[in-house]
Length: 528
Image (cartoon, rainbow, N blue to C red; front, side, top):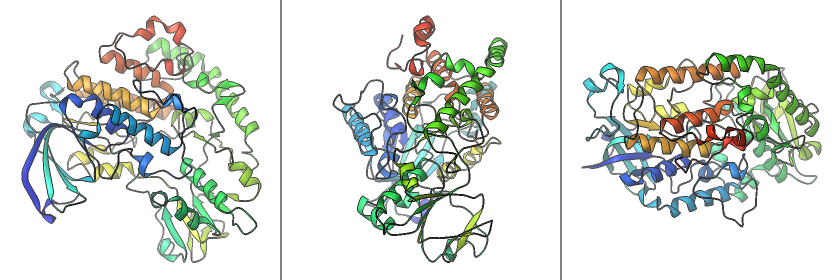
């Protein structure tokens, strides 16, 4: 965290009720819902859009269907029939949304938050709890946080004071996860070029092609970014002079070719009210526990049914890409990825090669593996993800940054938004589901009504209990639980949020018609 002493200062403190950090999907959604407070939104880059603007490849497309990535009050343009839009089309949609609802006027671009201070009353705050463990007011009438920001055009630090802050910087981008190597086995040993996907994202189409064309490229990883990158590499190396791209894979995850399984739409299996009865949910009660137990064979049958289709449709066994764990575990942890249509045709031509390895390191000519084999490479690209927790820790001051640590590895957020022990602060974009845009929009509505005083939070103890129960459910459902993913109980999660906001559960009155509807109905724009 940058120190204010290293920069010239603007001693004038700008006071406002609400500050928002980040102008990605969550940032613009919450700014729209809180627009009656005239929030100040800080965006470190030169544009809104988050990862869709600054962390996408030329080939990046939306993972979910377009209809599942749409604001409830702002449909996609009628003339756009592309089911899985490109990152450029997604960015244009988000920008149109922000422009239509006049959100852009609240956003300060090229303005980076360099320090945050807590200026509330420590004696009464008690890390978010007031007497008897009750959560305090979100708008106490005086500043609780001070935020120092620096513009790209100036060395001067400006200070802002807020009663409430919403953190929307997300888990991706900015701070890459870099593998740790033993001495003399790291990138310094390699004679070629090493970069992370965050660096590759910054290249334009021509520069990216020049980096890959005619080069022996190794891509480390097997998540969506690594798969897309391997395909881009193969497409840049067409013809007899083109080189092969090698994917170095440690952990396998199930991939799907599209959203149809044996002729049925994918959402039928996991994203309807009926299908979610197959899965455990937090605080479900004795009868629901018994029902889940009775439906266990059906749950495993659904997973095997989908696996059978994937093994028939994709040559996963041929290339050693068949995971050993059930498909359900990847769905429950939000690890499921769509395989690009041309991936395996390029593998058939020898342009993409898969190498399974749990340990590897550098030598001067490329990569060496634990079986003593070597891979020659000119370029090594690390598709190893991002450190979202470290990203938050660099922003929050002590002692709050220490509260981000948790035994499960998941930050405890009530309703995916409020940390029970951090006062007057919310976090958006840190929970994953079948549709991350819907998750952010619904929680923006929930947060706006909470700030407006339409309802109150439960006690700190009850909020911690709820988050703990959610983590325990995730741990029992999948071995990859260290992502806050609510896919298997997302509809129930949304229902509880709606009821907490005071909305009548229209879905319960019409549960038969909704039982087989995708996502159980996402019409959150109405208060029934």
